[in-house]
Image (tube, rainbow, N blue to C red; front, side, top):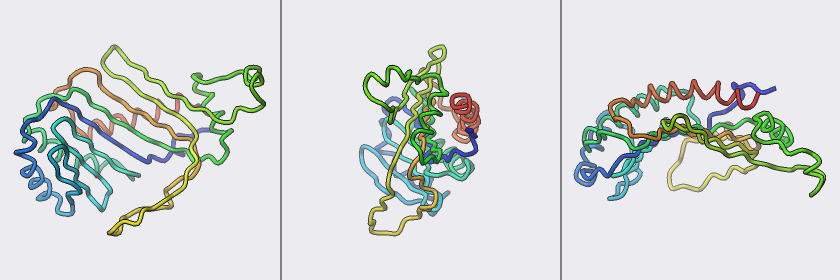
Length: 234
């Protein structure tokens, strides 16, 4: 039986797109100075004319910003306080410094995985969505057993917001690259086999940048994820 609490949130991403912020090249250093003053542990992974990326090593939060977008990301978040607090501060500094008044698109993506060793069990859960159901008589025209399948679809509401949803069974291996410096990574969280559930919530019309608060938006959407995913898979 499916329980939402069994899902592991592997990745949380907030993407804010906007029209070209031409002040980026001139003001990038000022933004970094403000963020580093507030978060001394932050490091600049890359600084370039097309994009700058900052990482908070202790929480594995990353922030990338460019003349066209801001991307806030965290792997295996234990909660939303860290990413929400950092996002509110950093995004506010970027928008004010680059004079960004509106977003052309706001996207909030959640990638979950449910540990399942048997792919047949994943298929049964996907059948619960009602979006995927191949009668056995049609399967038998080609073979004996349906081995694997994926579901991917988008749903929009009143041309205001949309959901992109993808479900599929994954089998993978853990390969940690040999990096020049140690990285924090809890390998015990890594699931080798399971049902991946990828949900991307996004806006379809311009949004005033002052109306978007990272912590508030993530908190609302992560709560909505429980009812949305549970409704699909139960």
